[in-house]
Image 1: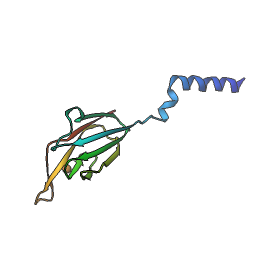
Image 2 (image 1 turned 90 degrees about the horizontal axis):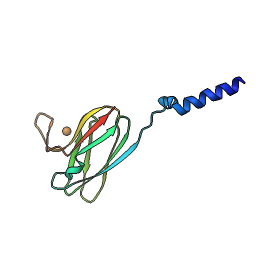
Image 3 (image 1 turned 90 degrees about the vertical axis):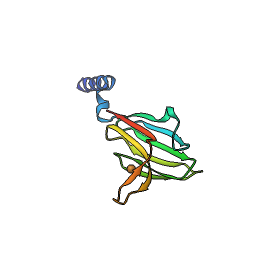
Image 4 (image 1 turned 30 degrees about the vertical axis):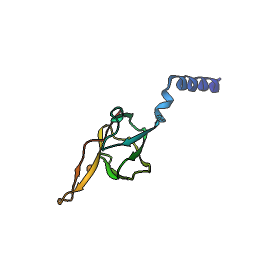
Length: 123
Ligand SMILES: [Cu+2]
């Protein structure tokens, strides 16, 4: 009888979703982002994801450029005719911008162009 009671409890836990707490579900989300004339299409400029999602950005461009995802600090080169993947797990919540790097500054920093994409990571 005890085994049956235990099994019943486990069933209730599973049904109530309590057991999922220890195994949070992370989605894998992919966005194809095409840069033309220094911009992605307007409807692609804001990306909303959930914390811990695996976010895969597939970049292509009509001209060579270096892009930088701030906060997560990922830098990638994009070459025309090729797709460049930028993949990260969205552990940190908040707003993060992807901007092109235009030129290196004498200070060692770099100059940025207009924001290509803003990524919002929600808890
Ligand atoms: Cu930068």
